[in-house]
Image (cartoon, rainbow, N blue to C red; front, side):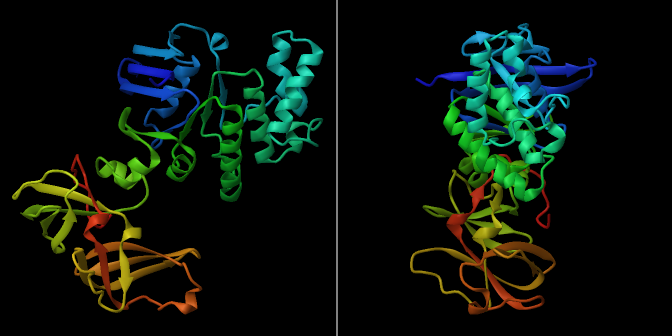
Length: 375
């Protein structure tokens, strides 16, 4: 039986009696896991974090921490600490004193304060910065001080509210690795709020994708990316191609979809479908191959082959992103550069090409919606 650190049951939060920020959300967050709330700005993820922290009370529903209902419990009496986007360090205190602040409030002995702060300094690799003031630190160092200060009191849960948003791209990647390492070392529950899908995907055990106050999909990063439930999730978690049409024929493992834009396309039957049924399918661009030569299908394996012209190429070093015009419509394809680029066949703007993919590499959306193919 799993042990849950935080459980939200039918939690709703209404502001000003008219705006529903969180709408009937239920979540179970396991002890010791790295859990992410992911979604666009204004979707309700920070409001959930604030309710767990005790800065807001839900309008209805319950929140438990280690099995105990914490609604009405003051923030300082919850075994929860928060790391904010803007660090919230005390500018007049040194790194040491910022980390020691909560320990001094609890009137712990000087020897205990020094022992615990030293432990956090080593954990967050702040050796050499102990006597510095916040104004003398880089963004990454300030964030590590904020994390050390939040962890020094040994909370049961650490809440992280977009903690890396103020950092540049390279530093964000570096700090993600550090966060993951710190999580592994301390072993407590991390609840991470972000609108950046790459952050959530790279470090989370489980992800809850939110939109307009609701949890749209919950699962592992692999499940959410490879098996999106609807067009919103498929579009928000990375990029994708959408195919909408009517099922023309069903075989044992595959079905043929009659699409207005691309004709008949084979897809893997990962759910039961019937002839005449309207279906929407997601196909990730990295599954799509772009070649100048027509591919030969391996025996017994279904592939889809379309003819088109390269409308756009974006070279990113590790990969090239192609937009290929198929008639009046566009298909996205990502090519990973696994060899030195000049050793490969160069595909350029306006080239006539074949785009093709294995029928198994798509996923049928459980909740179809009206997302245009060209988006």
